[in-house]
Image (cartoon, rainbow, N blue to C red):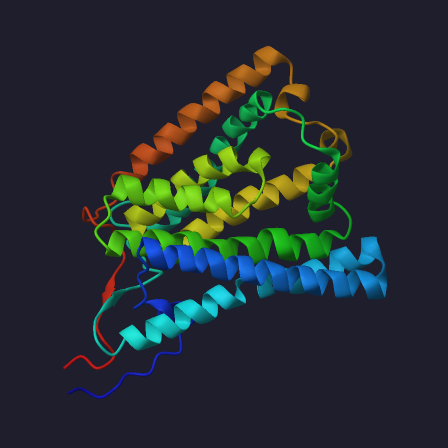
Length: 295
């Protein structure tokens, strides 16, 4: 038996846990438990600092706490399985022959383009309740630094760890067909937003993020995509001439809007076609890792 290899890289500590459907449901339950803990923290902050200020500061603490139970569960499962079998890395760098730099640029362009297209879906939904609209505004308006930390840093890091690094990689590792693995992980991504008005755009973006992860195995790349989407939304929400608009149709004349829509749809398709050139196996592109006690 070989000597145990210690691993201090954060993502690599989860390599041996590849959750199937039942374990994905457990992860969801752990996330709900974390949400309860986060709500308790928010109540404590608002009791001490008042509703407006307390909510702003609580978010910085409550958001990471929400993911702690899921991360503890996944970490324990990964450690236990590292003794008996191999796993798949959460974060790989398989960009050939396109190249990492071009992949990053394409990923950012595709994200912005698809996000613009999904904005049209808001026309299919009834008006958002005022209380929900106010809650979302509190996450993008107010203290810009705190909002940037939560929306642009915490959300891409923790949500990509869970939705692509755990759910999608786990499904691929359990021989689920890639198209279904991507769709299921995107549905999971939409579900955890707990907001029907965000669910459909989140699902479509989740499909794009999932496809990029399937082709490259790069969690850093999907985090960049998530960061790009959230940061653009945050910036737009703090521009006076844009923040009161419900959608881009209210910003541009209709002929201009539909021309931009067509251009963004074409850009998204071109990005997907370019990523299809990345060399990968039918099971995905996450690098395999041996057991910590491999001979």
